[in-house]
Amino acid sequence: MHAYRSQTCADLNSAYVGQTVRLSGWVHRVRDHGGLLFIDLRDHYGTTQLLADPDSPVFAEVEKVRSEWCIRIDGEVKARDESLVNPKIPTGEIEVFIRDLEVLGAADELPLMVFGDQEYPEETRLRYRFLDLRREKLQKNITLRSDVVASMRRRMWDIGFREYQTPIITASSPEGARDFLVPSRLHPGKFYALPQAPQQFKQLIMMSGFDKYFQIAPCFRDEDPRADRSPTDFYQLDMEMSFVEQQDVFDTIQPVLTGVFEEFGSGKKVDTDWPQISYRDAALWYGTDKPDLRNPIKMQVVSDHFRDSGFAIFAKLLQQEGTEIRAIPAPKGGSRKFCDRMNAFAQKEGLPGMGYIFWRELAADGLTKIETDLDGVPTGGGFGFPDDAAKDPELLKQINQLGAWYDPDHDRWFEAAGPLAKNIGPERTEAIRQQLGLGVGDAAFFLGGKPAQFETVAGKARVTIGEELGLTDLDRFAFAWIVDFPIYERDEETGAIDFEHNPFSMPQGGMAALDGDPLEVLGYQYDLACNGYELVSGAIRNHRPEIMFKAFEIAGYPAEEVENRFGGMVNAFKYGAPPHGGCAAGIDRIVMLLAEEANIREVIMFPMNQRAEDLMMGAPSEPLNEQLRELSLRVIDPEG
Image (cartoon, rainbow, N blue to C red; front, side, top):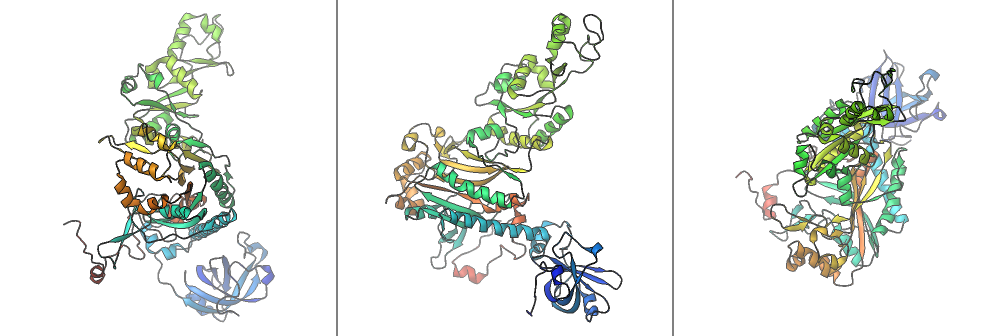
């Protein structure tokens, strides 16, 4: 028999009854039933129930065992009584009577329990990550991550890609985040950098004629942490292709990701129709370039309805250049309570509030002439038919003042409510309702100003409205390509033109596009959004040196600086560069979605904390003086 186990803790069933087996694992839980001891023994694969009574040769040793001790046992497989069978686990039909026990590793008092669902401070969980990882949820998450990576590799190989490794120690490059620098011992005063992405190398692979490249690539960025972003390092499915256009990249990566989400998405619907939405439309409709399309709400511009209106705040705002009013439709949100709640949401986000209108059935006391019709017959609380109202000027006047309208399907009158409705009048209110396609029981919220100042809050409000009103389909993965990113932006303070997005993207229209207004130049750059997260980013690359130099010149970078900073890649472009493009998919974020986790640290085996510290290993740490001397470095106190 093997020194430690003949089976795993998930293998045994009724077919093994009567056999002697050897198991090894961790003591998950101990239960003392008055002289009868039960132990749930756990390994990576599952759990087996053990038992011992005073007849067991090692009963005294079993009594000493505690949670998370690592043990090896020999025992006899017994069938459980029918009433005690546990159908929830593969080994639920049997239990193992302990005849021999060896303690492989005793455990000190535990700083956190592995058994159960207790919550612990993040500091405790990360300091004792090796214990935290023993918990069932994290075992599943990390196993899922491994399986997702393996599936990605298989799928990429199956469509003709080969995996190539790019350097981990390289030169510093501007990727929009800070580099991690590595001092050189052989070249005092000079530094390598950990790659923020394999961007330049994968393009050089295309220059070298390899045509299709992919890699499960580690990337290193000294970034501020967020719930969906690691502050130090992450992994991505990186790919690049030669002789392709934008649609070719889409057609290549879509079946790979669709297959992964179908394989590991726990039965959720995976959308296969991935719309292509321009960056500007995404900002307008959703307030973000990573929209959650499970939420059907689409924002609209309604400036014309408020221009020169009785609502002075918006009317004056629209007199300023570059301002607009946007509406967020809220189907089923037509109550004052919900509208007040959303107004409070906007105030928490730093805005004075949000204007709103909601539509409701006209209250029974809303008109003075509702008790009888024109012939004096009681109407039972209704407000009469349109022809009745038309015959009564006073009644019609009241209806118009309220902005009410008649619904023949329900034989009822309805009205618009809220301060905005009263200020802009019934005609404008009705025009807004019709533009937004809303009706009774619905609402709309309004934000105004320069879009850059309120777009983010509008996007958050859209998400909150969709969630609170139950409009968002949570049982679905909804994807969208965001395309047509602007290459340049203007600094509002200095007026200078700089890159807004990836400077290596090919401008749409090539060199001719760079002769016009820089702010109108779009790039062949694209992101893939899923359920409110950016999963993929990529571009068709600018492989023409003359176009690249011109693009950088517009942003204030002379040719000499481009040569100095990107000399390796620019030099390669001078020797027959093929058109090429690709993308990178964030593995950590994909697994986070598949595992239904809100924090990316739940799917990373050994993550840093919010301050980019490894509490378990003690990183970052202070170097020894000998190390600093060898590297010709001196640490300067930031306080002094």
